[in-house]
Image (cartoon, rainbow, N blue to C red; front, side, top):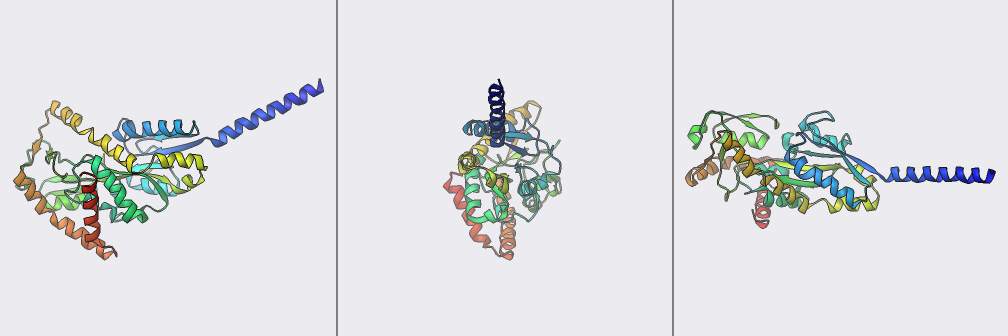
Length: 312
């Protein structure tokens, strides 16, 4: 009988050890972003991405998603939250911190990429080559653009530069503010809380986004889990996010039209006027970059070449 009890006790200890080992192998990643859960980044990317890494890791990798800044802070603080380990993974517009991501913000200059599906892989390649140092302390999962900025006006039709002058317009980033000022508008810069260019032409303005992981968290993973993260990071992941954002354009326009919205497309002549009017933004960015020790002209030309290479 004593032998039975000893074996039984050993079995309980063995089971407890096995359960503890399984728990130790499970890694829960805290994912933080600034939009509601129904937003494109969660509904069309993070939900599927988290499910995929869960399957590929045999359940060892799990996500706990915190939308709408539920872990605290403000959108401009998200990148530092990833770097400092407040969150394991974040999604943000890094250029909410004006001037900090100077080399990377070249993709926010006027009239760069036609869409996010082609612009996003170009952005990923550009960062890997030219500006990875700006993201020190994190492992980049993806870098992408969105489907391009539109100008939204209440009760006004704006089809020309003259009609835009003096109007107060919200801008998301430093370059966005410079773009609007060059057009004669009065920019009001603030984080995220219609005039458009033709679909075949580069978008008038854009913002860069990154999905970034705390470097120490990544380094702490065993090789098999690092392999899963690596397989779900990079240029193809960036392109997939860009494609997801492009897919929101037409449904969004239909919803706006159903609500009484009117879309004005710039004429070719007017598009050229807007392009010429904002050349100074590019020139100023090149000068700013040169002043910080970079080669602004070469970086700008490299970004344009990568966009073209990826079909943008």
